[in-house]
Picture (cartoon, rainbow, N blue to C red):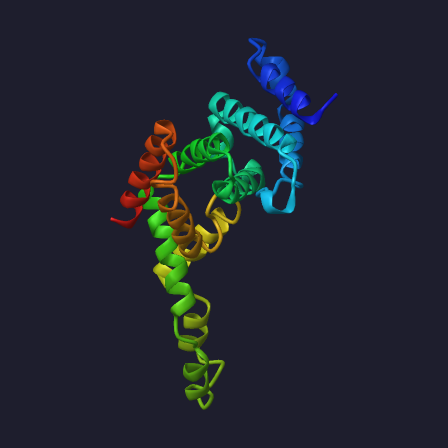
Length: 224
């Protein structure tokens, strides 16, 4: 059986009314879908790459849409953070695909992933990571205090405590160590916005333009 037919059957299975049956095999389905992206790349017609794989890519995206629509809790469940992160990164890469329907499905999945994160949460995550990367080193401070007694209660106490803002950033990074836009949030967010802007005017498919605008509205809420 071809890969695209197998993927299509997974999508049909996800639509069955027997939730208990689907629940028992959900992890297996997620693992199988994740593996489908291993060989997915943006096809280069100049190199004579076949189009047969495009249907498989599209069927994989459609099946993922069915999965996250039926099980939206997967997107916010830390247990599946790796799956969500991989799917998001692959969908962003597919925004450069030749076929408009693949770009549309990728935009739709990205919107689902974005909608699972409040814009304010994503903005705070990006700002916290930016502050951490630009924070001055404490080495100069440590050198100036070399003459102080390390056994001093006041110094020992200060070293054992974190400022509230620093503590909250560490907690946020620990909590969001996996998932969509969880690492290098600021740079990845900028890249994702530019990829969406590139879609504007690329073709006349109204559905794609509508979905791109929805995603850009979310990005505007994050930046605002």
